[in-house]
Length: 152
Image (tube, rainbow, N blue to C red; front, side, top):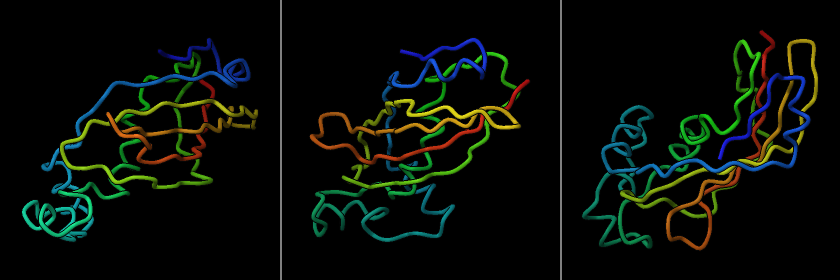
């Protein structure tokens, strides 16, 4: 489902609405590439044999920041706002990593629009984004995101 409004001025109508994205696989190749990009090669991420034998997770896990960095892809298209020149990441107010994502797992995001505040540049939207892991009892993370929808 997508939350759709015709213009940034109508974002107030989206407050309280929820949209959920498609499942995406977080495979070992993606975990390894993230490790290379961030120089975080801790064995719980990049050594499948050791992680299976020694970690409490039973296998390699994605970096928490990898899961967080997937938010733009996981939420892409969930909030469709006409009359917008661009959307700028304004920041995060709160992020909690609740459960690790095992390599090979599928994740998806749902977003709830919490507020929409007009600014001189457009409308600042605060949303709660939850990344769930397929088949897991708890989400991977919950984040309070803020985006600026810039007027066209």
